[in-house]
Length: 267
Image (cartoon, rainbow, N blue to C red; front, top):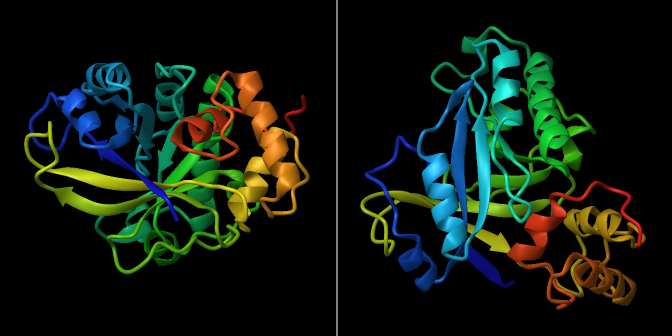
């Protein structure tokens, strides 16, 4: 499986700014920045995201839910983000701190309702399908229920919490798109201090997975989860119409644009 390297960062990390030109030269091709923390706007997103774009990286924004704070200002923060056409649809960060879900005094169902509301805010404002950042350990540990509406969102999962990064309950096997493979890494060119490393999994003909079906419903192919000749043709047609090189593979540029496409696209 071919992977593409990326980074994720927030203002709480080590000193900025990052030299994104050096990051790109080192082989990294995407960067996901914390944009909101509850209703708070991360002050580094407006600076780091444009700099990463200018260096040639695909950019994403993640929005961390604050469980004990009112949800309405958090939704407004997501809606007000500056997201460019070639960026990922925003990602909703689902994590629980000390004390886990019980410390929030919310039920598992109430937490999922908040996640759905945040996803909806990002999708309504920026188009496409939001992503979800979490881990199976977080999801199962919090007792969050499996909800079909959530399983349509793409997954960015942390594997550094222990072993591989399997999908949380509710998602099909093979639904993982981006994996956070290392936390607080040193020695990344252009970065002063610590940063998180991620990998994107390129999709090509022959794959059978839940994420193939996710792509098929966005490029006008039959959603059987099998990347065969018909899916390749449909993907190339979509790539040409979108102005992307028609490789017949889903690289990081293609995937970012697909996150901005609603299911049911037709030529």
